[in-house]
View 1 (cartoon, rainbow, N blue to C red):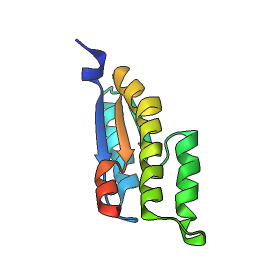
View 2 (view 1 turned 45 degrees about the vertical axis):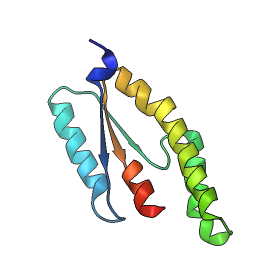
View 3 (view 1 turned 180 degrees about the horizontal axis):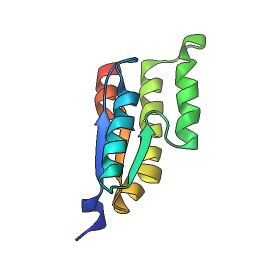
Length: 109
């Protein structure tokens, strides 16, 4: 069987303060107790490049940024995150739990 088929991606979506981080920890603990390998990550972020983009996006109120610019930065961070973190972890059979993913892009853009 293909190793990627063994990996899974779980995403948690919600507004700030909704409890995503708490739920991520709870789900991860239960999966680990069941003997599963789990990787916790977030968007934007999850990689050095993604964290830099996250910091830039969080400072957007301090500097003018067009909506298209913000969207392209988000997609750049996601592309790096998927290729560098998510796909390799899934290929290794891990369950990846991500704080936000594509649904947030639709909601915030």
